[in-house]
Image (cartoon, rainbow, N blue to C red; front, side, top):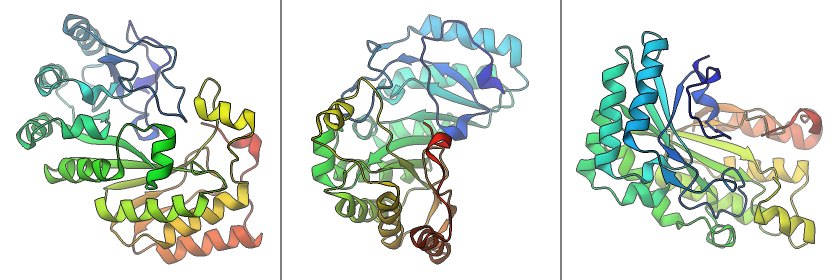
Length: 296
């Protein structure tokens, strides 16, 4: 796996979506320019910066010397490399395309406001350079929940960003965090998140179950007793409400290591099957993943 072979000068820790497991990871930014989401501690130890273009070029050249014929996918790290200007991104994409003759796809994490800051022509130019998939966190369609976690974008902004990216033929994978509304807003979070997904109709919809991590503000709330997570069955009920509310076309996955019940299917066709599986879990006919097997 290319992602397991170190290109020099990675600044750890390094993260990627599960679907980029076979990709070459190219770190063109370090950290996250927002870095205030209450649930996230991934980049708290890093100060955000853009990696200078000569350093990026050096990493590309070294990767090309080692794996030129193998690289079919590249993932641009860190947390929101899409925040770079369209001009800078185009420069990087041109060099990546020139280095790997068998390249098929480039992916990137993206925040809504970074997409919205670019014109349609700029987005189209990035797509023409094989930036084919964006990974974007909705986290929650519930405005109250989004405001509490300091997401840095509104539901409307996230919906618009997904629509604009897909209008230029980019695929978008949108993530929703089960449990992020806590016990008090579990069902509101589920219903509003489904409504938001219906409005944007993303290529992919991925559910992850929120897992508290040290050094995150939401973990501090849990420790103080001011935020309470749903229990496993309440989480399944939340997913059931979410899936019940989906009417759009999207490829749905709920098979991340954090989830209690693995699910996937193309919606809306697979919705009835998914709901039957979830009801089976609620009724005790289908077992939940043990806590010791769950992870990030």
